[in-house]
Image (cartoon, rainbow, N blue to C red):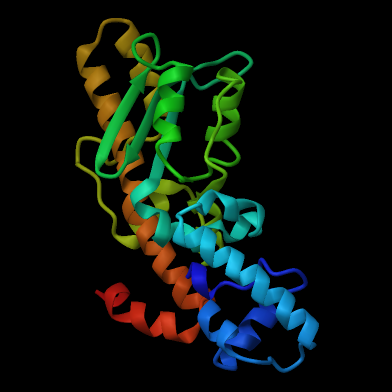
Length: 263
């Protein structure tokens, strides 16, 4: 989807991009191979060619975070496929209070097949968090741009996040999927283990308090709950990305993804 994107070109919006796709300009190479494009002056075509050559060089060298300043934030999802092996899926648990009075209790992070649980007063530090985040190019959360990231910034003010952020909550809304993470999971048939299936954020607060009071089972349940929150983001991101390509991408990409998504 990245190399089919033109909306980072100055003056090009989604309507122009869609028109170009419909005219057969499905990716950067097709655009560059045309000597002229209807509606563009020769000088503007040359300008856009230069921008696309730069973009292709950045992509070839896997400098994907450079696209964060080029694409509108709501379009960062377009890089999900090319960044997938260096994407960090993140979910946090808190004490239930605003960051001014509260704290982060658990941070779950998954990157390239490995899930890490960072726990307050054990291994949850700015340095450890930064090490995990620095290993990735893209951040995936659910409502994280509103909750998880600002909360973590308040508690760990020196923390730096990847510039690319695919917030699945807002991706889901563009596909008319409403509600919280668990509701959307159920709607899409994404399951959880029976032991944590009916738990929510308030239960996570209760489990933390139980753990602090010496309940070892509460610790295990809380970590399992956070792990599910984190790892289910992978399946959800894959599903939303494919559906967004079908809905918002060029028809050639939509046709290629249709059989896989239908399965």
